[in-house]
Image: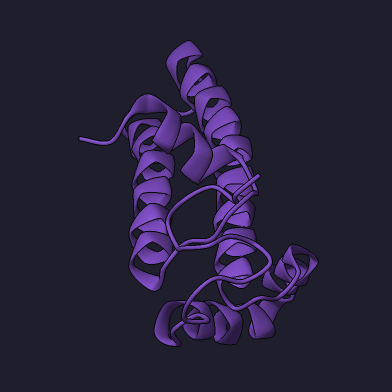
Length: 125
């Protein structure tokens, strides 16, 4: 089982590189975490205190997952030896789908690059 620090690095820190599998599975985990409060929100009566609570939990989860998705994309771009700022393309409606597919399907640069010596690890300092 990975260490807690590994999860913090994967979802909240932009240094290093990730592989296609780590990018896809990490994004899937983020989507599942985001879906839970949304699902709970749909089960309670509209306008109730419980629905307000679940909508707030969903909002907090959405903010955390937005950052996590950006971080995963930045590290995936680092695996291509590209700057992380290119992750902004994920906010362009139709282009984001193509960008997601490219990040999931195409292999990154083999061997070390300026963002790290290997995938699925923080950058070497």
